[in-house]
Length: 262
Image (cartoon, rainbow, N blue to C red; front, side, top):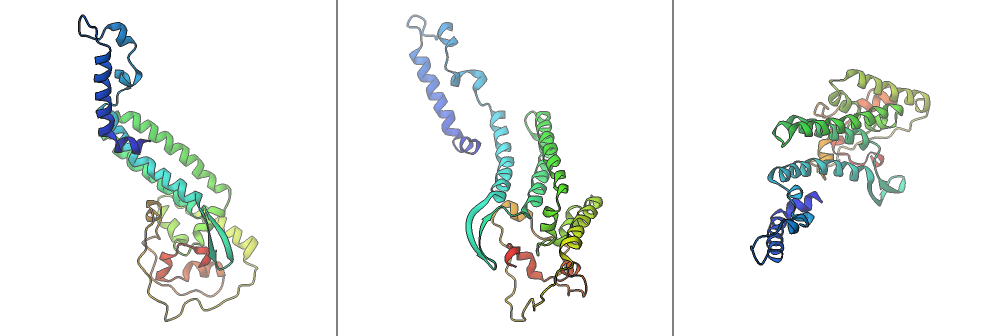
């Protein structure tokens, strides 16, 4: 609705001007040539002063049109498109990806932080700050609930493009968060998977084509690329498979979009 209104702003304003002129012509007194108070009291709602979009109102809509599409992008990304795609394990529906949940929260919170800093230039800035703070608080409340299950952090830690480097870089200001997440994932590994037999195979061939440049399909993916601190290649260590996974990497891992088919 906001996007459509901004696109049709000029047409909407011209429509109101023409409708106002038409209504006044139809309701003028034949004696005075003016619209009587009785008629003005029955003026259509669309023509009443309190219902008009002033310049500052349009400016507010421009800011909202910049903020809300970020939420739209995250929601659509987490919903997925439902298209069936073939992976190594067979056919599976492509819905929301569990590793995108943490990334989505980070994108939304960072967006609100950015616009909170810019709010001084908004019309009625205090009103914007209050609303942005309320939205940020509600998002953070649900973000904290991710601690109730290790699946969200595990999905990031096991994603070839992110691993623990993403946490170390994104949560550098909250080392306690990183430590807690690592403990949660380690508990899952030790209790459910560390004892399982691992079948090894050569992971990469010398004739493998060079990695392509990452393609960004929407702002959500662009915001969620691999950390800049990841080294181009590190050889695997011998021993615990989980620890080996965190160190055995290739520069092309940063382009992985489907960790299930990795």
